[in-house]
Image (tube, rainbow, N blue to C red; front, side):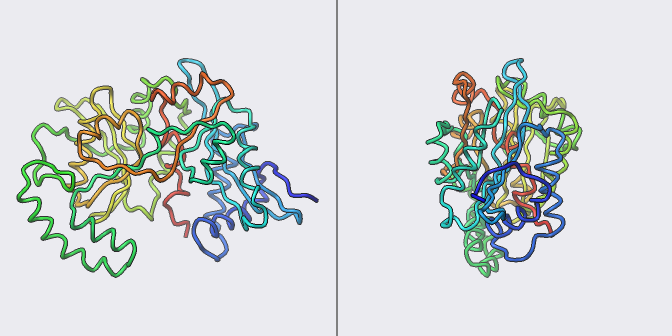
Length: 369
């Protein structure tokens, strides 16, 4: 039997979960039942599952699974026209040197699916090169990581701790240094926020799943291309997004005007003294900057040392005036046989990244103990 690509089946899940352990977690332990159950739920049983848009495995000559590409179907509206999109999620290959073309074959199988639009938001340099050869388009305004430092000394200590764990012992020393810096700062600088919240900053309050679902639909309406989530699917995603133990506690808040009118929402993860990870920022047109300011104020009050996240075209203009820094780490790409479907993504008129992607998934940030 020659190596080949076929659709994922339930019997493949233990092997795929084990591959995930080795490739992404550097773990040699057998996958937990919790991890196997999640792979089954995410890639075989979700409410938006499409019998024609499926994940794929690469099978070796001896019949063993040596590669996997996860595919998440996502119904979308292009204008008012229902269409099918697919998100390229987890791509992994075991023993790459034994079959260096396995990843390319998996990627080609994904793009050959019946979906109208193919997307990925987590392509590394190798995957990006493969996708470009397969005529996918890189989206620069979706492909930047942003960072906003809040407490510079605490940020330096946290970055040092990410390299040498014992450096976290220095964190208590960073607090008085940051207090001195903030005390002498009347205005926000590139390296920190002012000690007091600026007058006029909009308030925010916690958002439950139902409120968040309503706001996701409302705040994505202005986009030409936007997800067409069913209620079950969106509520499931919101519930699962709570579980990212490796990132810290979830913060999900709706931003309101003084009369209580919702104008935006933000979702991030992190514990006080740490760097928070932002998954989603949404705002009504004209209020993006105000929502960002509200998020930064909340993170500062919680004691975060910095926030980081992924850009979207609607965020960039507001961020450029608020002392954010940017770096490229992973790429977002789009592929479609009809070139007209790519244009809204290039023009920044498509809602993509975050919940219109894979960042909400427990595979990014949870433990599965």
